[in-house]
Structure formats: C-alpha cells, structure tokens
Amino acid sequence: MTEPRAAGFVRCNSCERLWSAIDLPPGAHAYCRRCGAALARRKPNSLARAWALLIAAAICYVPANLFPVMVVAGPGGNEADTILSGVQAMFAAGWYVIGSLIFFASITVPVLKLLSLFGLLVSVQRGSRWNPRDRTRLYRIVEVVGRWSMLDMFVVSLTVALVQLGVVASVEPGIGASFFAAVVVLTMFAASSFDPRLIWDAMEESE
Amino acid sequence: LIACEFCDLLHRPPQLRPGQKAYCSRCSGLLAKASRNPIQGTLALALAALMLLLLANVFPFLHFSLEGQAQENRIVTGVLGLWAAGQGGLAALILFTTVLAPALRTLGLLYVLLPLALDRVPPGVAGALRFQEGLVSWAMLDVYMLALLVALVKLAQMAEVKLELGAFFFVALFVMLTLMGAAYDRAALWDRVEELR
Image (tube, each protein chain N blue to C red):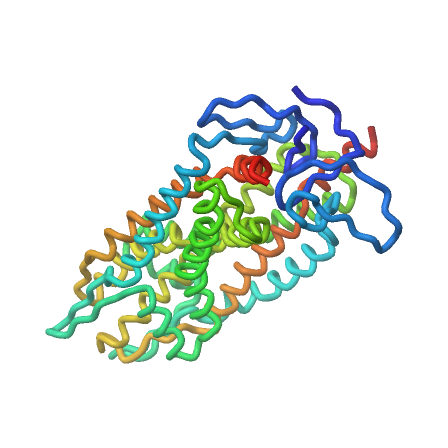
C-alpha cells in the first residue's frame, strides 16, 4: 500500500534508510547514522552536473564519428574506417547480423542516449507534467543500455592483436575511438548525475 | 517506511517471499527484492566468480593462426596492443571495464560477505558496500562477451580463429557474475549489519 509522499523524509542514497527530515542551518550537512553517507533530498547539483557532462559528450560525439576508429594498413594501402563506414562495410560484405549489432551499439544507443538525456533535462527544467511514468522508464532504460556502446571499442581491442601476427602491416586505433570512448564514459556519468525524482517534483508542486 | 529510489513515493515495506520482487505503484521502478539467500548464497557465487576471474585472465581464449604463425589472446593482449599504439587512455578504460571493475567489485563484496557469514561486521562496511556498488555499471564483461563473438566472425576473414579453454572460463565467469549481481540484496545486508551491531 502506498501513501502520498510526505515531504518530511530523506532517503539515504547510499543505504536506502529513510530518516525524518530536520531543518539545517545553511552550510550544514546531515549524515546517515547507519552508513555515514551525506544525506541529500536530491542528488546535489543534479541538473548542472548532468548538463555539463551531456554537453561535453555531445561535443565529443562529433569527432567520434568524423575520425576513423581503426586504421588498417594492409597490402592494398591504408584503410581507415569510421564507425559509420565500418557498419556499411559489414552490410556490404553481407554480415547483416553483426552489422546490425554494431549499428545498434555504436549508433542507435549513443544517439538515443544523448537525445533522451537532453529531453529529460529540458522537461525537468521546464517543470513539465507530461507522462512522468514513461519519462522515468526512459531514464532507467538509458541507465541500463548505455554501457553496450562499448561493444565496438572491445572489438577494436581484439582486432589490434592481429598486428603481432603479421597478417596486416598494422592495425592502429584511430582518434575516433578515443572520442567515442569519451562519449560513452561522459554519458554514463551524466545519467548517474541525473536525479529521476526531479521528474516527480513538478507533479507534486502543482497539486 | 521505504521510499522509491526513482520517484520518492513512500511505501510500507512489502512482505516478500524469497525470490519475489516489488515494484513502485507509481513509476514501476524496482522497489524491493527478497534474495533467497542474501549472505551465504551471494558469498558462494562471489567465491566462484573470484576463481573464474583468475582462470579467465590467465588462460588464452582466442587462437589466431596464419601461414604457420600463431598467436594466443587474452584480455591483456588487446590492452597492451592499444598501449603500444599510443592509445593509453583507451587501453586503461578497457582494462578497467573488463578486468579491474569486475575483480574489485567481487573483492569488495567478499570483504563484506565473508565476515557477515561468520556473524561479524567488518570495519568500514558502509565504504566497502558503496565502493562495490559504484563499480556495477562499469563492469562490462557481458559487453565484452558479445564483442568476442563479433571478433570471432570478423577476424575469421583474415586469419584462422579458434576458441580456446579460456573462452569456456569466460562464459562461466559471465554467468557467475550475473547470478552474483542478481543475488546481491543491499537491504538484506544492511538489515544483517544492524542486527549484529
């Protein structure tokens, strides 16, 4: 059974213990008596942090797609693949299943993640009351699915090992790979800075 | 009372039978779960995972060969390759997500679970629990497993590729870590800590 949310409680973000809220003088902190973590009603500076990390990720996303993630020097000269051209090459070679996997992990997931976080942040900042249940669900999906973008980076790390074999002259990870990894890491931090409870605060303020 | 992690709605703690989960009535997020055997069960899985972590990293999992040349692959092979190519940051990220994060998470859990199973509270429980929980989303062995499959198909074009014993340990490790994550029950561990203090 549920009761309407009382403003008089603080949930410890670290151990889940619920404490009744107390008034603190400005600048003072309360700590959880069970686990010692600093108590906060919402994740501190949630929106500012999430925005900063999201903008940084969006900036890195541009070079991540423009520069090659892998440069293969073979008998036929240098072959540089960006994320998109790598996927195209796989489809051209008829590897539809693997091509789709990489397309999903390297293109669909990061794009949807950037857009979803952007949408969530804008909606919270505007105090939107639209469909909070689905927005919260979207947030949970972003949190769970985001890490799968690392797939292509792991494939690169497995391919690089081919060099020692002398099959190809060199397999070099391109700078695109570093930027792409930065996008994954920054969006993961952005998602964890965002506090989904802010979505519901707008609902209660207007009740 | 407990509050939903995602929307802060207050609920009376649900009475769950072992293995059941409760979801928030307002936002449908996971509210509480009752692990079947939160201490001994998770401990057993963590011990198994620790052994498999060693085996999966020691034994090579991929074997490349071409025209009489051959090469064995472990996770570190790719990490060192990236390092040698001047991509230190990427090398470090891959080492962290595939080796360090799963290993440190398992060790952090063992540090808490082993004493709890012996009815003792280890010093710094709170820190250890926070530490291992922070690593959960960074442990990406599941993603690495899929990358292994992709590489298997992709690289078969350039050389002869075979799976080796290490791949078996990898699959076992992946299963064990997944079960360990599912058995982990933060609320139950904290309840036990409070009982013992």
